[in-house]
Length: 311
Image 1 (cartoon, rainbow, N blue to C red):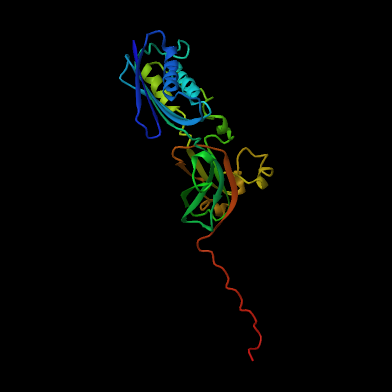
Image 2 (image 1 turned 90 degrees about the vertical axis):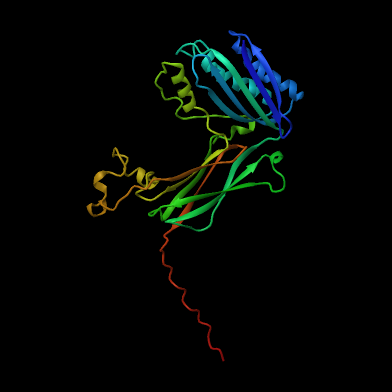
């Protein structure tokens, strides 16, 4: 029999622990046990936000596979069932697991629930004058679900970026989430653009665990702040030059840069930083154009005004 431990806790209430056993060959009922235990303890059907951690132990290896997820959902019980089933599928399904036997020796499922909808959409980015060669703090403004906040309607998070030399001029400031399409209002959404790239087929259970660990979904509270220079020598050419260089295979063409510039020319890489909005499922994206001033920019003094005679 496979021991299955389900721990459920809501808010700061004492945790409730349920110990079950599932027969070998009946692993498809483990998600039913997890969701059923949660439903029996909750004794109601209501929306909420859950943080779930699932640990799987195997007889064939000492490696323990752990995967966590956060879901804001109208039916958290259903999400516990679906996500648990998806995690187990990689090991217990005969066609999904081609590397060999993966005999479960233990399953530990930890569920923490908050009875509010902890979702937030990226709403705005506040900033004042930005200078190159300095550290600048931007303020990301998020619009959370009304049930998750008290008092102020918005949630703000400060992010400090190092603005490199050569960034003076126009730039694009963007903030993206793991759910740029704003689907969090109907549940969790995980999208990895690299998931369609073919990976080497694992040959052992340890390799399968390592491969799954490397492709685990990112924290849904992560947001990425990117500052991209829009000048000629940035890594992303502006629209003005795209048509001009359409006949070339690279941008800019090698013979476009004057020889006297070649030694001093440096392609500007975007500045990027990730932060976590702890406890939230964040969706949407936001971007705007900003102007970065030269740190040593000299401004001409204003001419004195003619105030006329003072008689």
